Length: 347
Length: 92
Image 1 (spheres, helix red, strand yellow):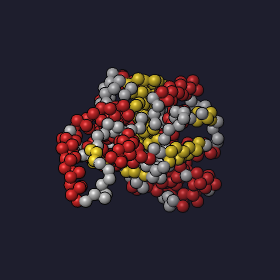
Image 2 (tube, chains in turn orange, blue; image 1 turned 45 degrees about the horizontal axis):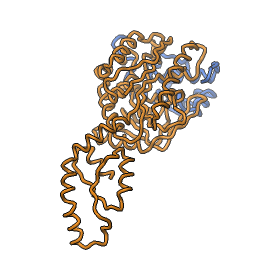
Image 3 (cartoon, each protein chain N blue to C red; image 1 turned 90 degrees about the horizontal axis):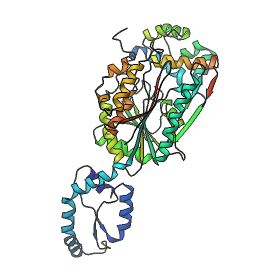
Image 4 (cartoon, rainbow over the protein chains, first blue to last red; image 1 turned 180 degrees about the horizontal axis):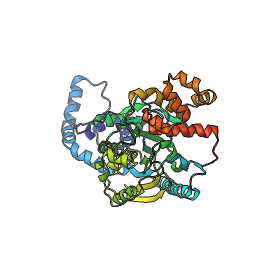
């Protein structure tokens, strides 16, 4: 069943032949693969004790059905695709400023609480959407990946992932089949993904999850996009990867929420730290509210660096997956060093 | 400064310096050893004398000029200050 659905989804005509004893098992498999309407060709059970001639007769009897099934593969696939489109249930972008988690006296408390309120809205949405898993796209802040090895795009595929930030100790189960599918299908589609079964999880992943994880909690799939160690992947490449990612997620049986973590304008460690480009952020949010997400793909890496928005590569990835959907801006709260935005794209 | 990116390709000549800043940011045990005896801790990582002096002075401009990554400079400094003069935080 796995092979049949896989080949068909990848454009190779296929007919899966099963004996009648296995009809229920095949249906359960198809359900699990997000292909509940997958049609098999059934022959009488059992096969094993049959003579060569009897098997030949069985095959002759099924021949027309097999031909029909193979020639109808395109229709079968497109039906499944449109049904499965519901499986990417929501898309969000969240700031991950660490001062939102541990607030020093330098930070405006009311502003921090307003961002928390936007996070709480995301959490309620995730609960209402009944997400089974959160695929979260963030840029590791030189925590998992130092200069010893710098992946452009990476997927965490272990059973769980954990990290620390100051006094915070966190641990999340990874949705392993989903993570594995993302790597396998991503590579299949030409994205040479790095994967890890054991790497510390950066606070860029943790901060939004701390505030937005639905109750009961769901497993995650952490997806890294290199934002801090030049040369980073271009916004165009991130958008392309996002488009492939969206197709992969939509073909899954789980209800998946996609979340970008990062942004907006900030310049940690540089002399621009106290003067981000808030006007740039506001203009960009207007573009996204109008549903022109693909424009983010056309921005150069140079411009992102200049505007303190290197992390918007995570947004470009999510926008590749959701397409030109209008952004619902939950909040934009510029602090003295950071443009804090929380956004939803209703998919 | 105009035209220079904020985040540059980290030159290989600064690998050890960046390694030290990374350890100060992310390695609790190394940070503790550094706070006890900074010079000894930096000797573990075979830092050049000028790099070590810049780290000791927390001289951002000097560190950046020597190829340090700005984010690592920022976070290493923040984590050291958090240990030395526990800032009062409100934890959420």
